[in-house]
Image (tube, rainbow, N blue to C red; front, side, top):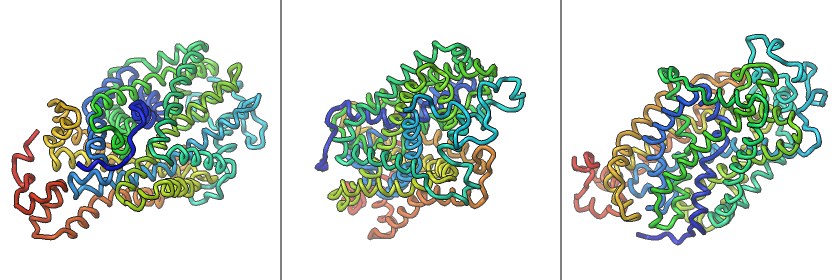
Length: 567
């Protein structure tokens, strides 16, 4: 085995924190607690933990073992089955696309962080230059004003909602996705800072990024803990936590709940972006990645659950203050962390301090996930193209700068529309498709038995029958279920009341297809570029590169039934 002359992690903890920092991101805070609340509270944990154990963990383990054994990024790792190399390019392209909009959310957090450094938070009251004439003081909004049709979270004329949409995004100056306008200069500056941080975290590879995560992976835990302690001392907080954990088993009869649990576990662990492969490829060969997979995926899910307490204690306080039900203030996504939560913070004594810590948390949650995605692109492509490996720093700069240029689209007046489009299409169906192909490639074409021998070579023990069955049958079936479910339940693009024009859905599918098409196109390219008869070409396509001499002897194990039946 050729040990690639390459760096490894400085210490084992660098790797663990990088994986945790990558997997724990904004979705753990803004998506999971809301899903849990909406889908039967404590009952939602049943499908969630089930999917974690039968699909999340096996895929996580598979990616770590794959990267560690082969010591390659997401594309070149496919020397184990050359015809599948296209899926490596698919996930690298997806990781790149996600960077285009993910960094914008980090830039918003940075903008909010700077704006918080005043004695009075700018989203506390009306009467600022960005407010509309309709702006309403939140103190006057209570259950009776709202009527029974509107939820408070959808109420767009509070100072906090107007600050986000009018003060930060300038959304009111755009008529739709066809009318973007120029990038906002304040957000552009914030984006420059974010990209700079990314570049200097990654420019020396894992030697530098492995140290940055000491701060970015641990800080969110400190802040969540502090926010939780503050949250549970607020009036009404217990009602919020009760609503969060309220167990309703009847919800489990609903297929949507299972789909939510499946997609959440999949996206939350972040398997399939090529990131885990890239990170693991810098491990020592005999590192116990089995233990790492169990530890980091558990930490990720416990974080999601824990963050719900910090979120819902504050939502309970909001509901209490306005005399509305919890369901009227409960929301997810950007509306939760940029409107509802900041508004709650602004009413506390010492609000400036709480706002600063909260936005530092968002910043650190986002930045190491973004670092992971960019590392996947850099490791994936430098391992494949030697010229890039020789100029890694320059290539890192080019990637960061390219990301910055495309991200400018998302910080125009109508930028949130571009962001919504990318969020839905860049890593939706395409990433599910990529991981499905990856799972089939490893466990069927390369062979779960051979993969298990590789793991034994690294760690001295074979994976148990449970893992082998999951890799071969359960995980691919799970991914197929999620692919089909996500395709059937997908609807046209919309942002609040705004429905996107039809062409934007076509553009979205174009973005999605642009990454997925690497799979069939590369397979055809590989097949036609090989010598020999039809049968020999097929053999070369699906035999690991280090066994190609066996093909010449006509000894192809993939042509035997034993290979396909092995577990």
